[in-house]
Length: 114
Image 1: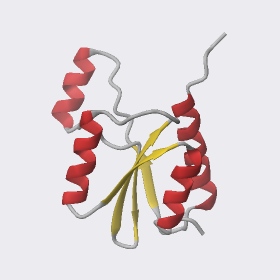
Image 2 (image 1 turned 180 degrees about the horizontal axis):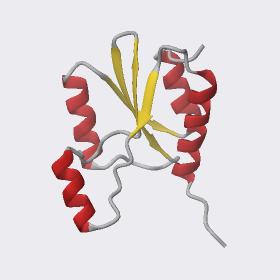
Image 3 (image 1 turned 90 degrees about the vertical axis):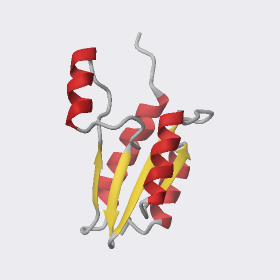
């Protein structure tokens, strides 16, 4: 029997909400930052893959947003915190959301939903 991955379930739910509820002028995407082997990882890093990139990157109304998702009780890694710090320094908005309700609340506050 497969165990559920709570963070993945939150991620899928957020993506579903964005597909259904995002304003037409919102651009959003997920960066799959999980190489399958050391060779693939080295190639992707050379191509520009960056450790700690948030789960969702959004662009709306000339503003940039980074949303890192965590299951209840989950904590961001050092590389995730560093990415968010750099993202904010570059003028973007970055948040670590714990659980689905917090993630959706953040997206609503950012004004990306219809």
